[in-house]
Image 1 (cartoon, rainbow, N blue to C red):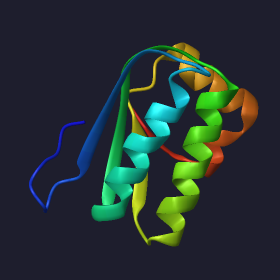
Image 2 (image 1 turned 135 degrees about the horizontal axis):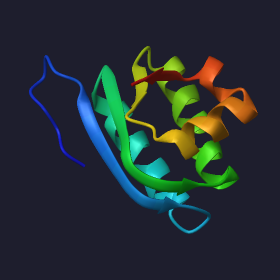
Image 3 (image 1 turned 60 degrees about the vertical axis):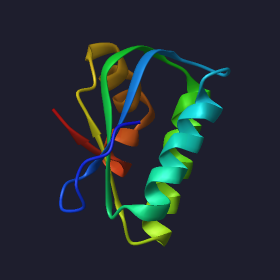
Length: 98
């Protein structure tokens, strides 16, 4: 995880495959960031694969953001990741930016 100054969003960078093994670590990173930052950006530009476990981590993180009055933004999702988000309808529930 890489943080910015307080007036900037906190950036969490993910890379590679986010699957059943990696999803808990993604969830912990997002949960920790959302505890102390009003805006968290998840940089997905280096993610090559996501499965349903990773989607669950994103949904749980969005729920935490909603409860904490924070904002979670997904940024830089590649074609495969965007396809998965659209197939599941999560592109409407999560803030997704180019």
